[in-house]
Length: 361
Image 1 (cartoon, rainbow, N blue to C red):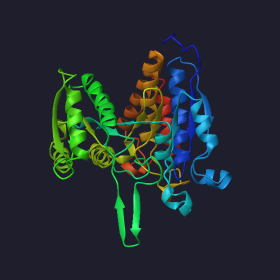
Image 2: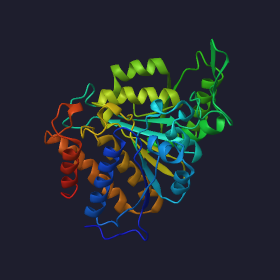
Image 3: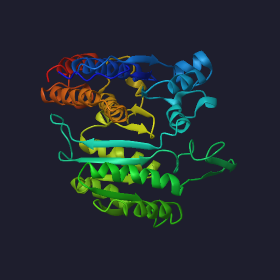
Image 4: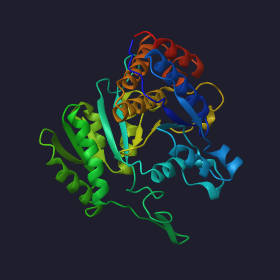
């Protein structure tokens, strides 16, 4: 049993969000609490905060100031999914993107690997997509004021993409540092053949950063070719670095190759803050039925614990993360799964199995 406890308990924000959010966030909280207890780490001081439709009803905003203020005083947080497409028109800005922008969470780290016990199209897949999170072609975060989409007439819609050298350098360093701890290969994904200024700047800046990591092999691919390559031979990839929209699309594709979007984890981070967030959405049709798969947020929470372990110099947090990942794998290997993966377990039943298994090592 590990006796190295942190000097101060973790203070983590907890945001339920919409749809299945309360169910999967509640499951993640339970699993994190049990894993920390099993690793003999100090318990978490949880800080519940509102976001989404609940926040609109109570505060008149999907992302109220009380939430942003509360998050500033935490070590990190778990974010549930949002369903902004269902919000009233004046509240349609995605709150998850707004949080990323407000706290400058420039890196979105999305690991993809097959899980034993889960049928996968590509059972050997093991890669990480490093997605630039602050600009690119997402209209809600690429302009200083207002949206990156606008209509000069009702029949014409325009979109502005943003790529800067500074953001490209920053995300490239994330990718190359990660590759040095993995298999030592980075693939730069772009579309410079048809977007030579924006994507050309991104590609060329990544190659400039690569010179500082001579131990890492580097190549580049157009995004359409990379998508085909992922399907044909995913084992050829180690770390992929790309802009915002491309990273979003490729990570969903890769997650499905690994078995299910329901198991796809991600961490949004800067040098000083991190947010665990599942890749999937709010699935409003499943909300309240106790059928949602909580594994993506289990894995995302483990990523957050591992990030905090490094930042705080507390290996016990990384060991708690290991317990979560091993417990999820052992649960699947035992043939227990939720309905999206062909199983019979409810969300709460699956959670019980995982929490029991975090104590076995």
